[in-house]
Every structure is written in structure tokens, then in C-alpha cells.
Image (cartoon, rainbow, N blue to C red; front, side, top):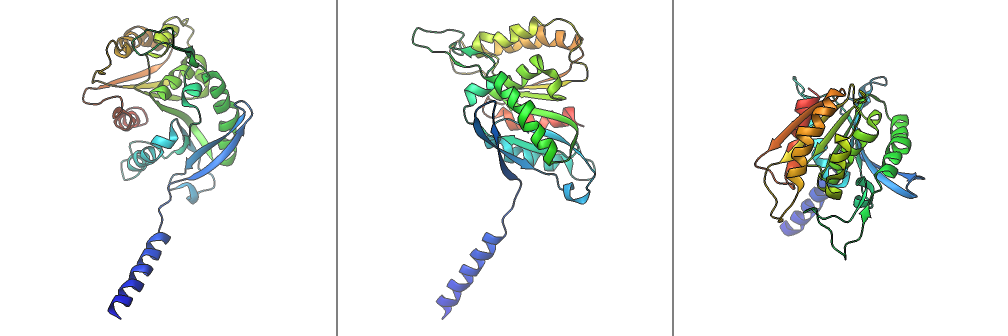
Length: 276
């Protein structure tokens, strides 16, 4: 009888535990006519969303949402709550991938991280303009129609996602108010985007826009990786020129972080620095 009672209690306890799930968001889909495929995205609503039918919230569009959504929600909840919040409450939209290289890179390229290409290398990527059209023309309108969005928009990306955020800033600065690029892949296409940034005319196209760039400090073990060289070129040449065009930039180097670990640390620092 004792064994039977133990088994029953264990089963009831397990059932009760299964009923007490913790939900941090909801999943939704949209068919993209631009991309010709169905896309999935995740949405987190702030704790106060249900308290008022009028309050509107800034929206964070998070690239690589399948990888960073949970971390972004944790950072947001920690910094937007309490008596002295470091950032406003936001709606978080995590954008999931189907073909990451295709969607997030601004040009077709066969160049490797060392700036070289070989006869067997084939060009890949280059679909960022189509993906930008999907974000700006399809996903954002749906999000803003379904939820009480207002008060600004932020795009956050790491690696290829950071490169994408920079390419949107340079080519379509009107789409977002704040751009967060975490260890962006400056090396892509032999640093082509950085050269594009340096060649921009001084026309004040970035007035009111903010950029946060967080980069890792530990060098790669890959021989000849041009990433940090191109990053310095962007920081010391292209970025000051963009600042003259109205951009409000922030740059942070994390000496103890690698490309793989800098994302969450940079995400945390970005929202303290920009959205305070």
C-alpha cells in the first residue's frame, strides 16, 4: 500500500507540474509573398500589456529569434521591471530563420573570412534586400495591426544578423529607430558593406537614428581573418562620417568575450546604454 500510495502521489505531482507551464510568448506565422514562403515568428508581450487597452509599446525585432528569444525576454524582464527600470517595456518579435545566409547578407559572395576566394568557392547569400522588404512591408504591418505598437522600433542582430542590421541602417534608415549590431560579420564579401558605408554622401539621412555596435575582443584562431581589421575601418572611418550625418553611435568592445559569447553580454549592455 505504501508503494501504491507513493506511485499515485508521484503521478499526481507530475501531472500538477505539467499543468504549471511557464509561457513567455506565442508563435505565429505569415506567408511572405516577397520571399515566397511561410515564415514563423514568436511574440512576447510585456507584463502590463493586459492592464490597459490604450498603452502602446516600442517593438524589438530580434533576428535569429530561434536562438536568442529566451535570452532577450530575460534581459527585457530584468531591465524593464522594478522600481528603477533601465529600459521601457517592449513587445519582442523573434524572427526565426529558414535560410540565414541568404536572408541576412547584403551581397552575393564567395570570399572567405581571410579575404580570399578559390576556384572551387561559389557565391552565396545576397538576399537582404528581399528580407528587408519582408520585414518592412509584410511582418511589421501585421505586428502593428495585431498589437499596440508605438513609441519606436528596434532591430537587434548578431553576426550575420548584425551585418543585416547595419545594411538596413545604411540603405533604409527610415525603417527602424534603433539599430543594435552585435559582432557583425564585417568580413563578409571582403568588407564590402564597410566600403559602402564610407562612400555615403553627407546628407543627414541618419538624423534621430541610434546605433549600438558591440564587438568581441578575442581574436579568431583562423589565420588571416580580416574581421577586426575591417571592424576598425568601420569604427574609425565610416562611423564618424555617419555621425556627421546625424547618427548617434555607441561602440563597445568586450575584451573577454568571443564571437560566440558576446551576443547576450552585448544585448544586455546595449539596452542599458541606449534605452535608459
